[in-house]
Image (cartoon, rainbow, N blue to C red):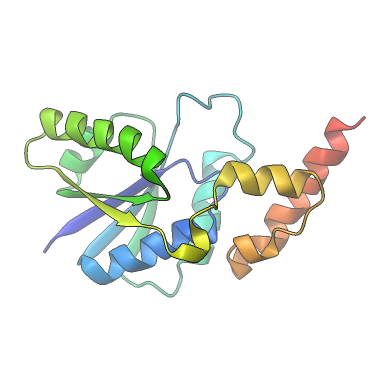
Length: 168
């Protein structure tokens, strides 16, 4: 049985994330989506880790071999603790590759049994990022097509509240 992990901050989870998770679930026996802390974005997260886990769980109910967790430590350690041997990362563009490749090499150095698989995003999601979704949503733009249907209303409502709160 091959277990894989899809790590990310998922603030919030987008259709691009779900696309990669769905494709990973077709490739591996078991997939764990792990909400991680992005230390470059500490203090900038809109949603709590618990909210992000809930949003992902609601968005992946159709994938029986996918579970969701959160972790605030070293990804390679999480993988080792859970018998996971593959990291799945989605790539939007060449600029993503440089950072993800560096992380893949570091994870391999930490745990030689841990491999990274890169999945290019679908063409319709190449431009999509959580940051872009939050920016457009906070400014009142229509982001419904960028989000899983199961959570779109909750994300839109929160971003509107954030926008209203920030304008006072």
